[in-house]
Length: 98
Image (cartoon, rainbow, N blue to C red; front, side, top):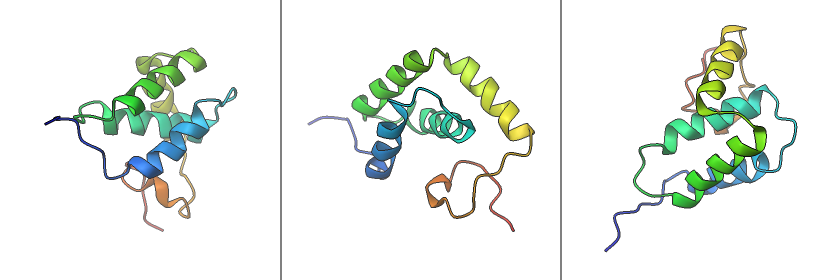
């Protein structure tokens, strides 16, 4: 029996990963999405394919995890707020109040 699990948000996250993996010019929301997926999957037991794709995206964008998190911290500090209609970002830590 394998200890690897499938994350409950796998299907939604797979769509996001697929959109990021070929994105040559990532925007703020793309960086935010990648950072939150890294946080979601880093210690999750399983999802090797998604973890490998996250590493591919970092290499493709020529950015390290440290650089990514520094960048997203700056993005959030400039009052970045994703659209409240973007339900995929629930759980990312952004302010959902009106």
